[in-house]
Length: 242
Image 1 (cartoon, rainbow, N blue to C red):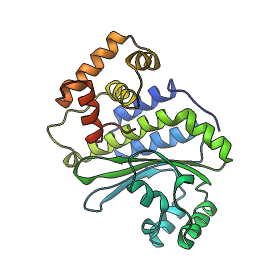
Image 2: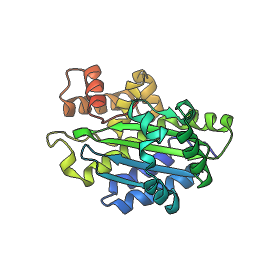
Image 3: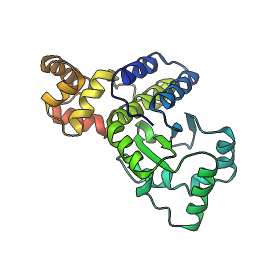
Image 4: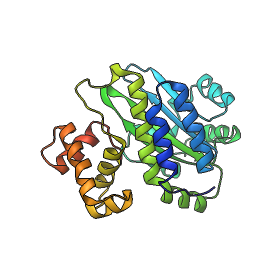
């Protein structure tokens, strides 16, 4: 399992996602991501306020069918735990102590889900709740190294998958909202997690002047008074995830 940097992997994937206009495009992108990150599975799954579901991912079809047949959504610690959280979570931090939860975990591993996992909860407009999950079979130390190295990239990718899914269901988006560009999202996300402007510019390999253009553009689109206000609004609207 290799650790990959933000470029060229992320740039290439963002390019694919920007051009996506149908569910199959998201499926193709998520399969490519799985191969590039060298993990067993990556899955994107959403549920709206009406209970409608949409998803794409690399789990075996037999596991997806069994998950639905057994009603695992009710007891899945990943879904239940992430629904109560706003930040990314390693599966080890979830509650697997119940008998039903332990049996579910055993069944999932038997179907190739992997013994390690990292899930990013996303809250979008109109009651939308989504999860972007990466799972793999490896040691705890290997997984800690992988998630530590790729955490920021995965958060950005989670947002872009959700944004494209929302675009495919335009009725789920606030009509007045102007979408942020990928670079604006990257800049706002890094500012939200505490990076200084100099650190953000260095991470994105751009000048501070160019960064200022992205930040001001995002601020205008969000109708914010200043950068702090813009970050708060972006988080509140689910445009960025930290």
